[in-house]
Length: 258
Image (cartoon, rainbow, N blue to C red; front, side, top):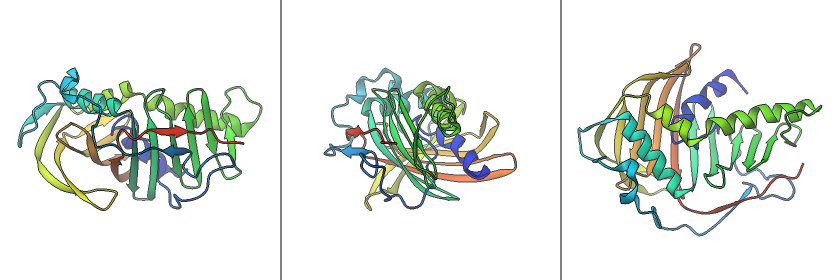
C-alpha cells in the first residue's frame, strides 16, 4: 500500500463509520473459489428508507434541514450514523486520487463488508477475517507463525476497530459546527440524479490528519448519499469522493476459501 493510499484510509473513516480503504481498479475481478466476485449475494432493493421510522430516531430530534442553518457537530454525527445503522446494509463507491473502489457493508451482525483495494480484498464477518494479497486469500490469525496470516490480522483488526459506529461519531463531531448550504442535485451511481442537502463542516484535525474540507449530502430522511473530503498529513494531500447506495438492501456475506 502506498503512503498516499494509507493516508486515504483515515479521511474515509470520517464518512459514516462503515467506510474503508477502497481505491481499486478492476472491481469486476472474480473472488476466490466458493465466493462470488463481491463476496456478497444481493437481495432486492427496497425504497430508500423503507422499514425505518427515521422520525423516531432520538439522535435526529431537533435536526432541521433548512438553508444557511448552523448545526452542532454532535447532532450531525449522532443523526447520520444512527440513520446509517438503522438501514443496516449498504454499498459505497469511492473515488480518490489513486483510483476507484467499492465497499459492501453491514452493521449487524457486526459491520461485515468486502473491500477492494488495488489487487487486494478484505473480508470481515463476525469472527471471520480474511485478507487477499498478491498470493491469494489468507485467514487473519493473531498468533500465527505464518507472516501473511499475522499481517492479515493487523490489517483486518485495525479496519474493524476503526469502523465501529462509535468511532465514526467521535470523528464527525470533531467538526464543532456544520452549515447547511442548500439542496443540490447530485449524480447517483446508477446514472440518475437526486436532490440532497449539502452540509459543510468547519476544518478540523483528527488523529494527525487535517481535514480542510468535508461535505455531506443527505436526503430528507437524514440518509447520507454522498461525502467529499479534502485532507492532508505527512505532506500528502488527497481528495476522496464517496457515493452511497442500496441502503437497506440485504447482503449475504460468504467467507472466502483459502
